[in-house]
Length: 291
Image (tube, rainbow, N blue to C red; front, side):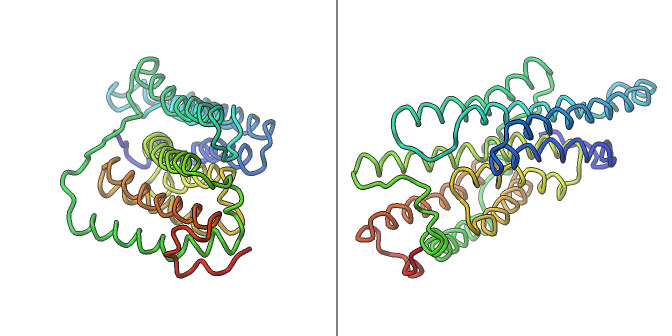
């Protein structure tokens, strides 16, 4: 993961380009407006082109190795991923076609930016550092325990009291429960591949960590909104998205942030099963209120 100095391109114009690009996510996934989303992507990439063009004369006078990365190229990777995701509805469904549709679209949203970065742009911006900083210590294990306890306490109350569990299909047979387990876990892994290893790392090449993290969280939370985390869900998903960015910066480990996410999603799965079938997995002390 290559991170250039935070001030290299973090001008107001560069920030505007990035903000416009990521705002396509709430346009696509919250407002569900294609034309607003495409317009924001077009304008954002256009502003990035202006930033690159203005920077080129200055960089051409210095050593080639000192040149800042292309903002247009990097933001285009985010735009490509968002455009691919938007080819499908994100409504949670468990039939064969829906699962294939999710696999192709979400898989493409990670694979295509990776391939473009590596083979077209030749800069390998998108990487997947599985092990990162080495062995897990007390911090790593302690955080996993904390996430599990917080999820067990908060998620049942959120899903059931708000009624958002109904955004996921009823799972009343072993086959559907198994499909839900696979779907929740697969999307959780994908979240980290796209939001952290693609969007976040791209933004880190141009902006300070806090700004890059805020930008990736906009995309993260918008996607989860259409997926079903509605009502007051953003009060949960925004902190989670930001913490995943912070944890990734500390650990440099995709494997660790995926583990955190999968633990969280294991509780999500259990809560959804319990919400649709109160007699199953009745282990949540905060699950009494129903919307």
